[in-house]
Amino acid sequence: MQRAIIGGILIAILTSWMGTLVVLRRSSFYGDAIAHASLTGVALGLLLGLNPVLVAGLYAVLISLILPYLQKHSNLPTDSLLGFVLPFSMGLGVIILSIIPGYQPELISFLFGSVLAIGWADIAVMVAFSLLAWTIIKRLGKKLISASFDADYAKISGISVDRINVIFNILLAITIVIGVKLIGIILVNALLVIPASTSRLFATSLKQMFTLTPIIALFITIGGLIASYVLNIPSGPTMAVVSGLIFLGGLVVKKFS
Amino acid sequence: MSAALEIKNLTVRYPEFAHAAVESISFFVNEGTITALIGPNGSGKTTLIKAILGLLPYVGDVEVYGKPVNKIYQQIGYVPQRFVFDQTFPITSYEFIDLAIPKDEDKNKAKIEKALKRIDALELAHKKLSKLSGGQLQKILLARALVNKPKLLLLDEPETGVDVAGEQTFYDLLEKLVKKDKVTAIISSHELDVVYTYASQVVCMNRKILCVGKPQDVLDKDTFIELYGRDLKFYGHKHL
Image (cartoon, rainbow over all chains, first blue to last red; front, top):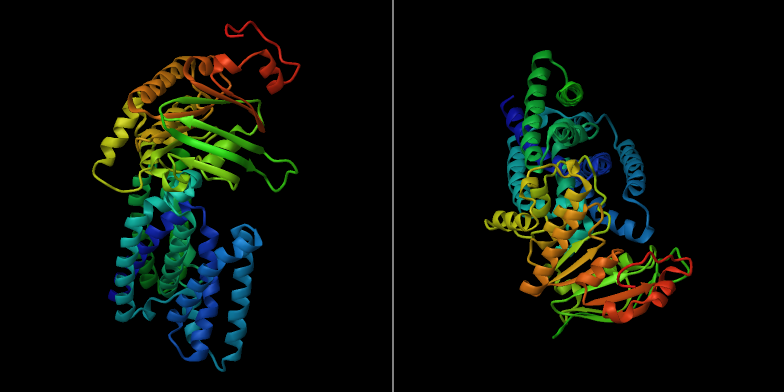
C-alpha cells in the first residue's frame, strides 16, 4: 500500500500537469488513442520477453512522431488519424497476444491497472520522469498554451508551433504509459482528462486551473486507492469511478452555484 | 527616412479559388508613418496583412526593416480583424497578454501593466477574456500588440466593436506612438475620416493595387467608384 500511495501521488501530479494541457488543447482523444495503442507495445514486450512498459513507451513515442508526418502528408485532421491509430494498434496488440502461448496475467493488469504491480523501480522511473516533465513544462508550458489558444500569434511570438507540439506529444505518450501501470490502458485517460475537466468548470484563470487540477487528481487517486483497499475492489476501475463521480458532483455544484 | 516595410510582387492564392486573393502587390512603407489599406470587403486586405506576417504562403518578396519577417517577429504587433477563441478557456486578460511575451521574466508584470495602462484598460487585467465586451476585447488585443514595444504594428480593422470615444482614444494613442516612438503602423480600415486624419499614405486595393499615395492626392470619386463600384453613393463627405 505504501508503494501504491507514493506511486499514486506521483502519477496524480504528473497526469494533472499534462491533463491540464491536454484539456486546454482539446486533445483528450489523443490521450485515449495513445493509451489504447500502447497495447501493441505491451504485447510486443511480452512476446519478446522484454519489459512491456518500456516497449509500450517506445511504441507510444513512435506513434507520436509518426502522427504529425501522416497529418502533413494526408491533409486529414488529427482525430481522423487517431481513429485509424487506435483500432489498428489495438487489433495488432490483440493478434500478437493471441500468438503468445498460455494465460497472460500481466495483460489484465495492463488493461485495468494494478497497484500491486508498482515496485520501487517503477517509483524511481516516475520520480525521474516527473522531474523531467516538470522542467519541460516549466520551460514550454506558456508556449504550449499559446500555440493551442492562438496559433497565429504564437507564430508571431517566435514559437515553432510544430516542434512544440511534437515535444508535448512525446511527453504525453510517456506520461500515459507510466499511468497505465497504475490505472490501466482502458482507464488512464480518466486520470488525464477528468481532474482537468472538473477544475475547468470552476477556474477563471489559467493559474487557478493549474492549481486546482493537481488537488483534484490527488483526491481521486488517494481516495480511489483507499476505497479499493477497504472495499477489496480493483484500484484502476475504482479511481475511474471516483473521478467520474467527482466530475458529476462538479457539474451539479456548477449548476446550482 | 528608411523603409519599414517593402513588398514586391506579392501574390497569394488559395487552393480552392481559381483567381488570386491578392495579385502583384508592391508598395513600401516609411518608418514612423501610418499607412491605411482600404478596399471593399473581400478585396484581400486581411490576406495581405496575414501574408506580410508570414501566416499565409505567398509568392513575392516581403522585407520588414530589411529582413525577412520571421527574423523580426519580436518587433511586430498585430491586431486581427476577428479574434475567435474558445470561450470556455479559463484565461484572464493579463494571462492572455503574457502569452505574447516569449520569456518568463520578473519584468513581465511591469510590461503588461504598462501596456494596459497605455490603453486605459488596467481594470480589465484580471477579468476573464470570455467575459469582455467587444470593445474591451479590442483594447486587450491592442495591449497584446503593444506589450513587446513593437516597431511595426499591423492592425486589421482595429475599430471593430469599439465605441466612438474608444476609437478616438485608440487613434490618438496610435498617433502618439508613431510620432514619439517612431512606430510604423499599417491599418486596414473602412473609416474614411481615420484615413484622412491619421494616415500619411493610403493603399487602395481590390485584389490588385488601384492607388498608392497621400490620401488627399489619390482619393477622389473616380478611385472610389473603381474600388466600390458605380452603385456607390456619396453622402457629402467633407473630403470628397
